[in-house]
Length: 334
Image (cartoon, rainbow, N blue to C red; front, side, top):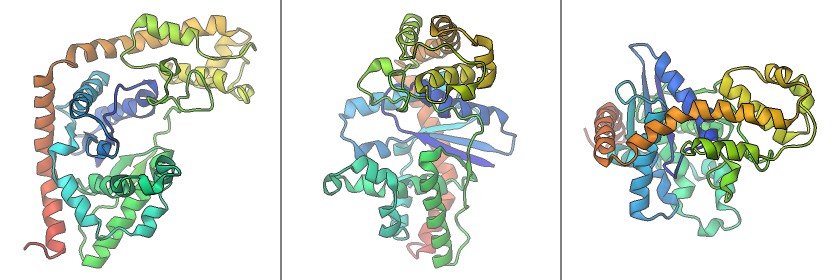
C-alpha cells in the first residue's frame, strides 16, 4: 500500500484543514505496516497559478512543513517534501499532457469555480492543474489517495489518464489509484456562517480557528462564534435548520471522538453560554501542543530545508523508475 496526498502551502493551517485532512494523514501514517509507505507533499508548483512574491512562497512552504510536523507528520516514517524539489512532477505532467484530453479538462468543475466569469483571463496552469495532480499521483505508483468530495473528480481523471496512457502505449506502467474517503472526516464550517466552509481565504479572521492562535484567541473566537438563542436538543437530528449550532456540535464531536448525538445528550437543554466554554477548553487543550511545536520549528529555516531536501531525495528515487518508463513508452529514450 502506498498512500499519497498533498496540500498547497498558502498560509497557516486552520482547524478545518486539521480535522478534515491532516489528522487523518497522521492516523494513516501511524497505522502503516512495514511494507507500506506514505508520501505527503507541499504543492508549491500548484501554487504558481496564483501570483505570489518569491519570499512569501518560500516562507509559506517552510511554515507549512513546520505545521505538518507539529501536527504529527513524522519525516522519518513518511516521505515529506515539496514538489519543486522533485522535477519529475513537471516532467511527467508534460508527458501526460499528450494523453489528457481538452474535453476531460473542460468538465472539471473546480476550474469553472476558480476561473469564474473570466475564463479567458485564467492561466493555462489553472486549466491543466488536474494533469499535474495526475502526475503527482501516478509518479509514485500510489495505490490510495485520500480525497474529499471536491477532489473525487480529479482522481477519476487521474485514472482515465492512466488507463489511456497504458492502453495507447501498450504498457502496464501506471497503477490505478483508489480513493480513501475517511469515515470520520469532519466538515468544518465558518464560525461566522454555518453555510460556508471554514477557509483561510475568508477576509474575517474570526471565521476560523488557526493552528497558530493562542489560548485566549481560541476562547475569544468561540465565545463570539455565531449561534442562535435556542437550547441544545438531546439528539443531533433536531439541529436541522440550525447550521451554526450544528457546526459547533460537530467540532466538539470531532475533537473529542464522541458522536454528535452523545454531545447533544450531554448538553441537552443547555444554551451556548454553557456549551461554548466547554468547546473552547477542548480546543485549547488539543491545539496548544501543536502550536507550541510549530512555534519552535517555524523559524528554523536550516532544519526545515534539511527535512524537505531529505524527503525530496527519497521522493525522487521513488519517482525515477516511473518517469523513465514513461519516456521509454513514448519512444523518447531507450
